[in-house]
Image 1 (cartoon, rainbow, N blue to C red):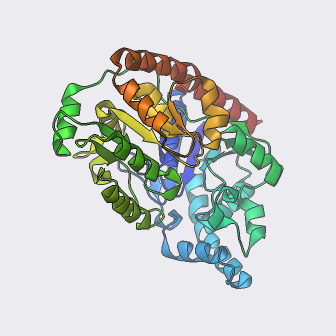
Image 2: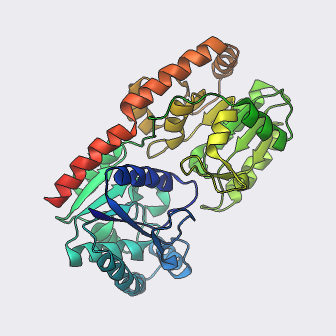
Length: 415
């Protein structure tokens, strides 16, 4: 099939971009012909059409989307501007879909989180006009975010976030989201978890990568390298990672953040830097040095996240909530020990898989610190946990699992 994939952004290190790349890899391996369209596209997605007004930061779209969630806005004016911008996007999308004679479409999160209201409306109109078989891949919904709780144009959320159309099959990434979609919108969905390519042999730690990265961070061979492999936004709970590293009382330890701030402003990063100073934690924000993996070939001169995982002594994942948990799935592959907060989706969908992590309940306790020290001081247990976690990922969260889901979804949507 000729399959189009659309999103506001297909670049960088956010979870939607990561998971879309995995769907691309599996669909390509199944023999499908893929065409992409987004407001930002990374350099290696050569088959993509770049449409800057599709990006959520495109000023007219950002302004009207912000106004839609401001109780003081004029609903009539907001509705008119959204309709105007959607009307400008629709011909571009129609041209792209018709040029490539698409058999099916995948909408990546643009119908779930209303970061770009005009794009969501335009995509609904596109699918409706062409009666195009479509999969809506929903990573996180508007009702999960407090900043989207008040909307002056709620009818537009009902219309397109996500839409109720006979040509659309819905996919959620966890069981809680599937239940919420049923409750909020009366829509059934298929749960497809985040995955990773576990077909490769289990990776071994790399002393050379470890030495190089530590040297760049100004570290010696001593001291823990603790990696926080997430974007810098408040829901990631990075305060807890700082608190943990502080309580470990390792004067040579470094807490490394590999992914960028800025999606929700820089205030949170500045808060973390002040907090780290108070806790005497050596915090290194190094997002400019890390690029996402592209079949093991990062965009140089940056490191890849692959390097960070191979060099890390410990991973922190203290998120308050997540749609799923890309870093946890990746940690299963790389065999890195993880301290994870028991956020709701983790409790519902990931903990039952049986992986071995150090769990916290939104707090760093003396028991947490003792458990981390005990695990890191026991090489045999670290090796056993790594083997066990890799096996869990291979059985439950592999490309084989995703391939099975996609085959069924494409059959269903084409019927």
